[in-house]
Amino acid sequence: MRTRLAFDPITRAAQLWTRRWGRRSEAVAMASATSVMRAQQLLIARFDGIVARHGLTFARYECLVLLAFSRSGRLPMGMVGERLMVHPTSATNIVQRLAAQGFVEQVPNPADGRGTLAVITPAGRDAMEGATSDLVADRFGLGMLSADDHEQLFALLRKVRKGFGDFVDVG
Image (tube, rainbow, N blue to C red):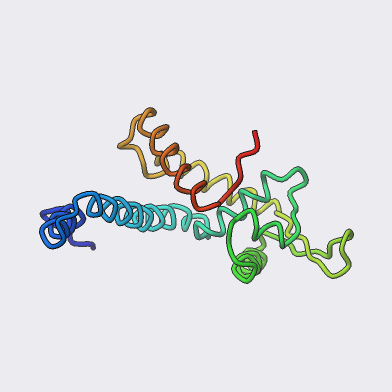
């Protein structure tokens, strides 16, 4: 069990930063970045715990959702990595683990003799649907936020992702 602190260590770090270097704007930037990283750790741990009930990690769950969202339930391996925004080696590992569980099949790509398609199986769809129901029931771990909070958080984080060149707005 995780020990709960009697204070917010990120707020404390920002105070110490300001005291040491006297630059409040930098302290706030550091606190914001550190808060994003900590929130990500907390959410991934929570999501992994939820989807584990269905034999998944959150990364594998995301892959199943990606495949389920595709028109035919199948995508070339290169596209899986690109859409999941992970290194090709990571995408291969995710798909291989899902295949070992019977949640995905790897089949030759008829459009590319050397390529492979990842194809979601009925068992994969069942696992993904069950995990999705559980994540929705948990409100994706963000039940403490209002609808307006969600809109603001998404807009701010989208601005950060766009600033890093994560995507290009075309429309």
